[in-house]
Length: 402
Image (cartoon, rainbow, N blue to C red; front, side, top):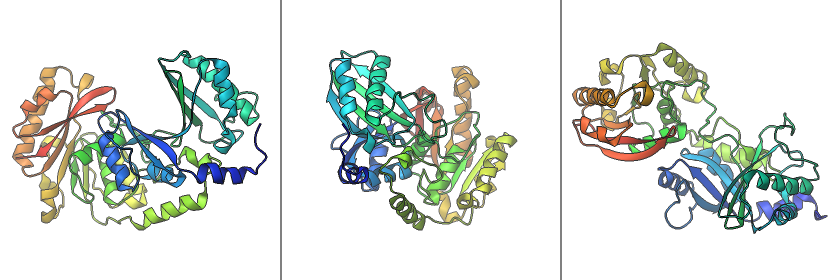
């Protein structure tokens, strides 16, 4: 039975007034970067090393707003809402129905349930989801929870993640909605697309600092360039998008507006280009240039040109002399099926290394290669980092070109 206390009072006491446990999921290989980002926001990660694929922090609901808005390397932010044991479906359904879901979801919310199980007597994920949805529907006073039929115009679909391990169930509510790599800036894709989250991680690992010159000579869709431009202007990663938490019963518009105002006050207006994307494909350059031109906060940050990397020189760009020693060149060359054999890959990386040594001496480097063995093709020392990208484990090479 739902308590008779006014709903707003219960939300204030039980949701807004109490610390919550949040799990920030990331791509494997960038967990420490994400934990460092959390610390930079004043959100203290759980003690010890971050786990594989994510990290925990304790905070309040406005801290969830901060994490979604600012984190550049996170996939999504989950709020842990319930934990219980169940050894049969009747227990599962009853404990779900006993939980105060009305504090977290509107009655007509479009809900999607994701289940993973390990060492649990209730191992059938579809059955777990069905019984969970029955209990949830009973609590919310609905006959059914069907994401395909629930209010097609309801906005963000509310995702609930259930993890069952050793008959212990952990239930989390997704605060992000779309994965956080979706910045709502570009709709086009490149020839070798890279997620915004991994691009930001690469820039961080390469030592990029806001306002440093960045040359992105195989820009494709321009992910490196857009991420660096947002960093340069102090623009939060989620500035242009919306989030699932904005449709929670506890969402407070004034709190959210205050957080955005404070972020806006810290932004820096860039008046001369510091980001230099280029590509041999004119259509990709046009699409990227349109994004910069149509986005007021980014409009003067970048100079986009159509050019082949192997004919490119640093002198092609108006980079102040005192900034050149901090310059970074970021390269995501074609690889995999588009590049062909390992011999072809080795030949390309050798050519890139020779070009860099000849014309970009002193610049810092971020270079993605499909195989760490290709390090030997470069004529200068680099540091290798293993990253997960596009279903593959790839190697990021960073260092100073000499």
